[in-house]
Image (cartoon, rainbow, N blue to C red; front, side, top):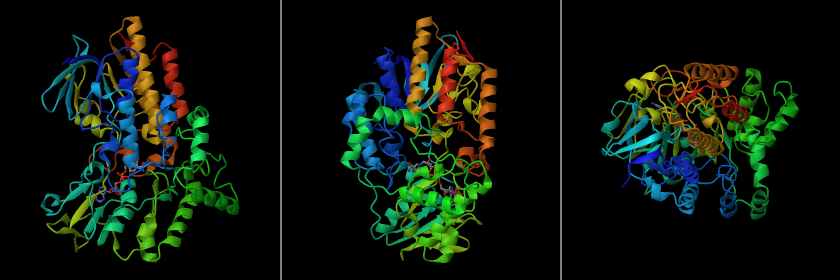
Amino acid sequence: MPTNFDALIIGAGFAGMYMLHRLRQKGFSARVLEAGSGVGGTWYWNRYPGARCDVESVQYSYQFSPELEQEWEWSERYATQPEILRYANHVADRFDLRRDIQFDTRVSRAVFDEAASRWTVETEKGERFVGRFVITAMGCLSSPNTPKIPGLEDFKGPVYHTGNWPHEGVDFTGKTVGVIGTGSSAIQSIPIIAGQARHLTVFQRTANYTVPAHNQPLDPDQVRQVKASYPELRRRAKTKPAGIDFDINYASAIETPEAERRKVFEQRWAYGGLGFMASFSDLLLNDDSNKTAADFVKAKIREVVKDPEVAEILSPRNIIGCKRLCVDTGYWETFNRPNVTLVDISDEPIERVTATGLRAKGRDYAFDCLVLATGFDAMTGALLKVDFRGRGGVALKDKWREGPRTYLGLTVVGFPNLFTITGPGSPSVLTNMLPSIEQHVEWIADCLEAMRAQGRTVIEPLPQAEEAWAGEVGRSANITLRSTCSSWYVGANIPGKPRVFMPYIGGFPAYVERCEQVVAQGYKGFALA
Ligand code: NAP
């Protein structure tokens, strides 16, 4: 079996699959190394109950193939995890991708050989592959965070992590369950777990904002319309900061009269979904504007949750949209159920997990199983699990000790011929991941093609280009309120992680324009050898 390739791609989620397809189209040899036993990345691992995408399915899909767009039929406004995984498998089959994907293969180390200008990639099983280029497609939210709560190993029952859920599923019927966390994964799974469990206890450290999904089956007429005008939908989406075709209201919330403002919020609430944050253009720029939206949501919580004390605990105190906004189906309502208890641990961490449950705030709670909905070591976690060694044997984890630094979120000084799809410093998690992935994949494939045409074999960003880009990522983050709270965007959920706002917040259109300018100016900011 060959072990020497033009490119080695790490990960067979949406990024890795399309990267493989694109490189093949351009006549490059490539091998994808994937830790899981199947394609799908995040949708392969995150099989917790209620998992579904919060970007509408007709937008959370590939656009590189008009035939694929036409033949695939989404069934719901927001696709479930099983449906998205079916889609990923369909793509793998349709483009015959599996023959170049090696499953059950976790990459542990990647070393750049300066003399040969090639990477050697090692797997946990001790296999070695050589590639001119290494392209990471490992996802931004793919390294599950298991907090170091004392006693976790003492618990006698099963412990499940939402980000690494058993493939056979879990039936909570008749069980007592504890859930730690109230982020997106928890907010999606809690209503379903509560519907099955005898009793559910939710441990909440930070209350979160969520807006209703109003999910529903897709109307066939609507699907026909979308299919007839996909290019137009995609074009519109690419003009929006998040790469999602939201209707953005460019008015200021605080400058809009109260009655009118309320009407706008009510309309967005009734429509549902992440577009709530586009109710007004300054919700993440102006504290007072933000407060109007936050107060609106808190009033909704009080309307739904019958016990005022519980409603108060569920009411977030930070600004809305600072942590990633959640989208739910029946989340607040769940706390009206007699079999659900909410425990506020905002002022005191969980003391310890015990053999039969856990101890928090001086009280023991017992349950049969424990669910950790505790998120991910985002954006850098998966990358730094691999021991990347660049020029002079320098480790990526040392280079990024003070936080990630990249040029365009795609390349790193000292690590030639390494590309990071949706890497830190790119819009990635602040956008619809699919178009962001496609844009990176196409940029990388075009770059490799241009290098081949010019007889170049090594590409590396210049230190001043990386420095300038890091400055721009930081400056744009500081303009918005988004960098102000302790979110995973800034690494605050992982003890000891440097606090750096990791994604580029300047918006998808501005970012794409910048990437295109770099190419038009002869790969400005890069050294090509
Ligand atoms: P998350 O947003 O990071 O939430 C983790 C939760 O666990 C938070 O409530 C956190 O509290 C809590 N937590 C962590 N460590 C804890 C500890 N030691 N003690 C008590 N509580 C602890 O993770 P997530 O819900 O998995 O979501 C991550 C991201 O994945 C989302 O923001 C979203 O981008 C993506 N996602 C998307 C979807 C979707 O498309 N619908 C679904 C799921 C996830 P603190 O807030 O206090 O840290």
